[in-house]
Length: 335
Image 1 (tube, rainbow, N blue to C red):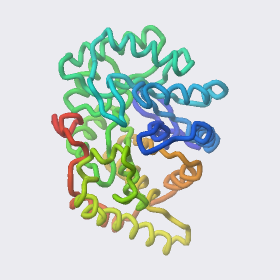
Image 2 (image 1 turned 135 degrees about the vertical axis):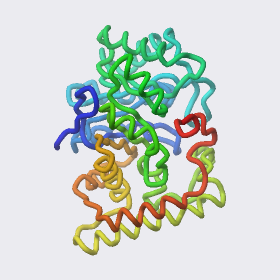
Image 3 (image 1 turned 45 degrees about the horizontal axis):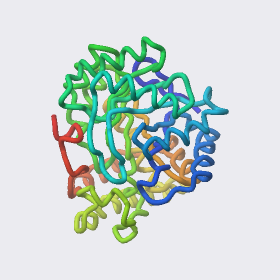
């Protein structure tokens, strides 16, 4: 599988894997099945594996450590620091102070059972701490050999520019999909200008764009209940976006003779955006099922026409509800 170069000459698979899906944020997880899914991802060529110290209270890093025991040389490993709490029950704090950066990396390395993390992200911006302090401490980790490349998650274009002057930034990880396009206004153009790659998380709209997620199906502990666009009323209105994706998938199936799914269309749309904005884009969809990895890989050979892109753009314009309860939590609320 052809690799993609993010910033700072960091080479990864063109599709990544988001590890958060293998924690109980969407319901119970079978550890054996989760590990089997990770192995299948690497077998299939999806070698860019993304996790964070916060996922499962550290259990996600410990799960990935079992994969790394025998396959470390095959994996481009990304992890993150800054959040305190739990994705399922809510975060309690954000920390970007230098002391925390130094502590967090050592704890992650121990859980992951490795000596170095390939790409280390600041998960969220601690507004109490100058970004110069946070990124300066991250740069020290590179010098110490604990980290190879630096990344930032949900930063503004100004924060990205400041950070990049301190140390080369390899990637920005932000939510980006057909129904989450706010990063296109400032963050994506800045990344393209600086030679920084974009790593979209939730590229399938937290599963919604696949057409398989319905309000009645969300369990009591599903964290999507906290997202405004999944609220009662909004989720029904947003079905029009799902319908548009499904129409494009149906049209591609009919014209090419190859079965095309909504998930593949949603991912192919992101690759098309990468071409439009002239920057490397590596989505990191997560899943618990190995078959979904094979399905997602089908997006790499999919080409959307101008007409298809127009249909999707028009549908995206009608999305109801914010992508987060607190806009300041993400770049959208601070630009």
